[in-house]
Figure 1: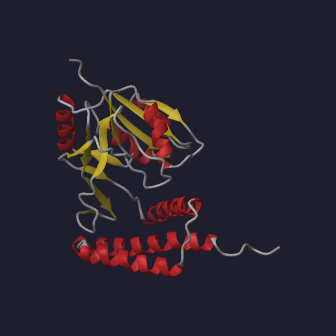
Figure 2: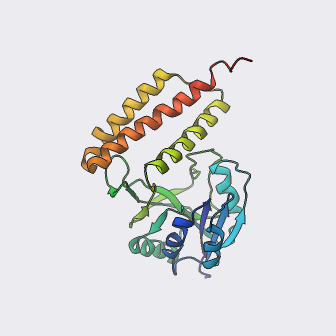
Figure 3: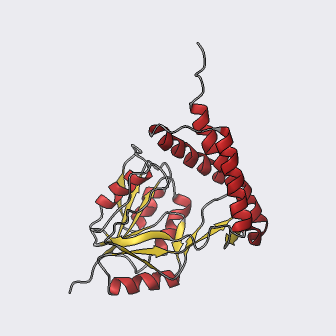
Length: 258
């Protein structure tokens, strides 16, 4: 029987600071690297070339889900392994994936535990770990949905999900400004999505959800065990929750008069 092939797939933009270490962590594991760029102005294309990646560009941003669908359409291998440029495989995870590929199941999606480094430490509580993400599956089996943001792999009734061991390290924010910019982008996309469906928002909703978010992360999910970083993350997450509802509410207000 022919051994199934595996592609690492990424969607990127201006990821020169992260991409080299991400791709280096794949060494010896994959048969193909597919990168779909949305208009990088840095050294991202050159770094992709260093690793012989198949590099494509779509700078007409359709949202995260559809961009991932387009990236998957360029894959020639039998299986896909999704990565973000700010992630790196541990040796334990590489070993687990190699074991799967030695005897793969055509009806199975594999979930991977992700461990995030934020503001100076790995976050092991706060609801952030093991943060399992569906990233490894046969290309013919499934793909991502159409969501503008917080896109998900579609899971059908005929599919099973199996947990892999070994962490995917996630170096998600360079600094506080990066967090705030990234969070604002997600909030805008969330509000775009809700607004397109005719949903309305209120400041009271935002406040209630923000308080709930803080209590859940810091107390119920033991964010206090993540030290000062856990406290800051709970506060920032509550703020981000308020902002997305506030964005939706602001869109409902009267336009500036002439």
